[in-house]
Length: 302
Image (cartoon, rainbow, N blue to C red; front, top):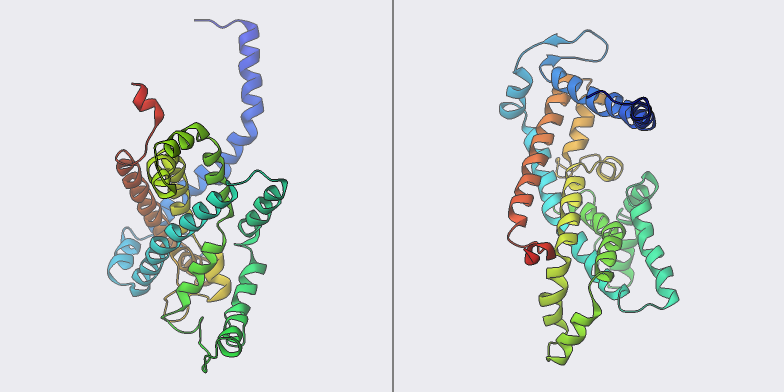
């Protein structure tokens, strides 16, 4: 069917307005994805021409590189603990902030969101490193207030290092908290009033009303935070550098080291693609299992 001149003009105008996004997608997403996939089958040190080596990078990654599994283990541990703790803390704070509509609450909401804006920055990572240093605030409180006799190497002990980064992740709860708060505002107050009349207490209302109706929001936060957890980089790079004994060598940090420190760009590309596959599989599992616990009101209408 032949389009009129006006329709063709409207279509061209539409493409013109979305052209910045199209150019950005092609230049900064699609092209790097294709290039990294091709480089994963090469030996490439940035300075010389890539040399095709087949599946050598993949074989080396799975069967020869012990640090690859250390990075994978550290990242999985971080995701398993940091994501639930952050979401739980964000949910509790959102519940508290949802109890009142006083003007001062709006200020508190803004204040609680600040850690999410600066929590992953270099400045805050340096601050966190000082707080958990040998002469930092945490050891000062333990010795001078709680009376603990010895200083703890929070960042140098393999037992404690990763937990300092998990605590930092919990401190960055502002973004999921605001999303939880927006979801709580959408739950009709009449449901709580009816439940109270029927004798339901606070905890029963939480488990029978709040959590089911908030489950789509919980699912959204879970997916986004899980993806972000697999890509964590700044905290480990600034605070520990992957030490001690690779216990904080997060996957993204190891990819960075291989690519820009060792100039092993082909191997780093293979690692990056493996991470993409892992994140895709985990996300797929979350979507599949969501059918059993995520409640959508539209389903009930059907």
